[in-house]
Image (tube, rainbow, N blue to C red; front, side):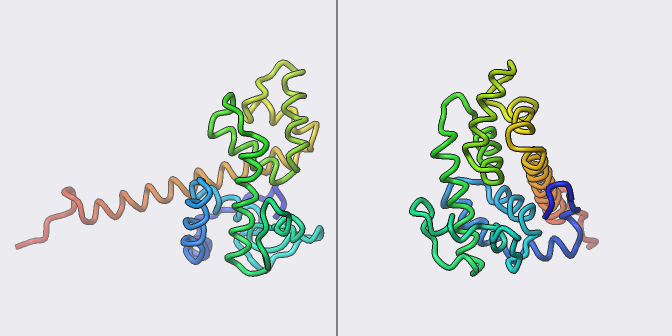
Length: 198
């Protein structure tokens, strides 16, 4: 999916699609220390949750993983055309990027995730170059939004900036939807629920 094309992920059709994959996102999000809704937002940006998608560059599946990346010893997940292996490989690769390239006490957890997402799109070396460039431009090399993203637009291109922004928007929408659903459920069954007539 082109980073510019942000879709509404909360139509009935899209929500029905998401429910098919929730357990897998939860399983591998928990295994690698990510909020599962972030993994879903990444997959939604990458493929629109279509595990049959294949990019012109050869990336496959719901997480748009390159088979060469999946077979690398750092990821080492076979047969990424299958749904579960694809989610596993994409999540494991994101964790590898976070832990290998952005494991710095000066980067807070939110920014570590944003840098990792940018690296998932553009490659880690470009994002590290963007950090260096941000510092040279007098900005904070440890913050993504309005700092390194400005340098990344030069170092990696506008696509990566839009990519991280879209995933952030999808993530916020998924979280808001979940909170709204919880409130709706609790109002049905909670102390404020309408009393049944006797």
